[in-house]
Image 1 (cartoon, helix red, strand yellow):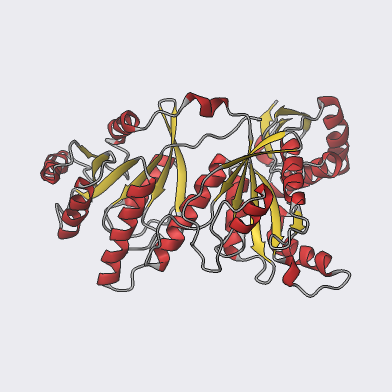
Image 2: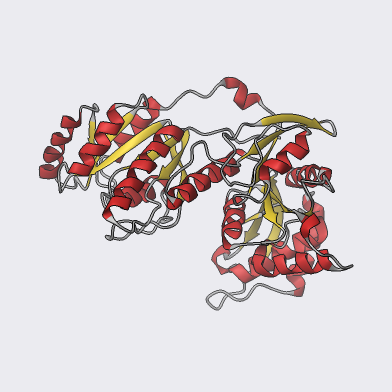
Length: 440
């Protein structure tokens, strides 16, 4: 079992409209955040990974709040800086080279001078020689080196990233050797994550009350079950009680995303009385993008009035909202009474085994070439699309390579058709599949 390590975290902080989301997009090389000139427009919580010169780190943009007044706005920024300082290993203090130093910049700089975390001053929008010279004024913060960059063009970001790598903490060697299966327990506040974790490990490790956010910290717990070494990653609660609702969401989401990144299997816990909500679907899609195994656990099942087919109807209702994620197993448990709780680990370990599974090439071709013969890919630019053969090139997570004369002719509906056949014949319950199409 190869295990995802806990990546160092770099946080982008700064006042509104200095280009934090543009910088985030530049560094992770995706258009993941919404970028707009209006302050506070970054509504989706953003988290990604950066690869630079053979090293990888996690990156977060702290622009995830929507202010309602200037006072609330400044309070939100102060809180997010506090949260970033607490969580991050390196801070990118982003300022605007076109406007110079503002009162809010000064306030943030004062806070950063009191931290022991490494801080890099990033002067964004320095997209010509004059602005790069004007960026020298930010040395007045007394925070060390200033890095003039343009997040839009990418100029200057290489030197900045080199400096980030120099400041990253060194990961302990033993983390790389750890072969335990890592299971992240995730879900919205008050669904019973800590209660479930306590039930799984058989002791009261976390403080459990009816107030969301009472768990003081997310401490990994190592257990042995059915001869397997398991690390439970409990994401319940907040380290500190945030005063501002958007920041509670920002911090909880950041920690959930980091837990997903570190895990092999993600166990999403739902409250039986509340059901599946849009935030839950976002968490599953994130886990799918990161190619993690997944299990859905409906907790507090003891509170539901049941008939003979209640669980089946509930399961169908969830699958009805999950779209292409209907390959995820769903369990019904009560952490309070302990009913069916051991099945959570059974299901997670079963998904871990599925994630490691390899299908012989001959058997794979026997099944898929028959499916292709029954339903050929549509023509591409007037030409026949022919899939010659397929091979599983990787496990944990599984990757399938198809060798095709026109790879671009394989569109999403046909990809889903092929994936459906793989799942029907070979299982892979709870496991995202990657299909790549290569020219042959």
